[in-house]
Image (cartoon, rainbow, N blue to C red; front, side, top):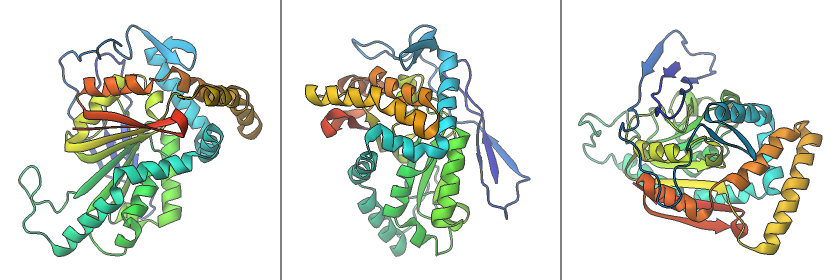
Length: 346
């Protein structure tokens, strides 16, 4: 099926990209189209985080070290990821010297998806009572555990969740899976790569029959989902590319269920001076050159390096999360602060 979502956007932004999900399965009827509008962000003026101000103020923002209009940044970031979509894993290897695989495994462990999935599977197998949906109807069509991975187009994090939840094994049975993983990304090229990888890795049943894995095009600042839709929201190496981080955090809170958890894995700021010096040398002198040699694209890799330096410090992001409404916001540094996992609760 082809589903098109049209999302409302905060008045600060010029417009919000039309958001759609398309399945590439050849045996599906593509004649029907469903349109819906998610609950728009609150109309009241958001409060700026204390002492640090709004992430976007005025008509310009940063694109790496360059100053651009807020309306221009989204398109330029989109172009970067169109350029690197087919080599995204190679890009991550360049950016992290291969450590991104370990960091993503740690994110999986910290989410607790594996033990949660075991509990959900057990509950489903025992057919616990008359479970109802939040609107009072049958919960048959609702997932008992709903996971949203934003800016996760190629599926690298989502596949870890699917594997931890044994989604492929569950796909051998009929009916909708009790656990769903939704990948949401603004870039259709990234989603194309991700869905192709998913079908190659798992086959089509996981996507088309049990709906355990979905790929949806959408903007992190105005997600195409109803309020209180997800138990877990993750975003890995994506938040720093969003034009307005404060807006994305507020929408993350909106789509989480009460008690839901937000977790962000992102490049951050190194806390050890000698390591910071080595990291800067590698970042500015090695990564762009590798991008030029391997992908014939120095500029995209140069932007990605610069975007890390322009992103929030660990403490600043905690402050912005609290201002957005998250409870118990905190962070955990990895590899000396090269990356950090920020988390908070709704």
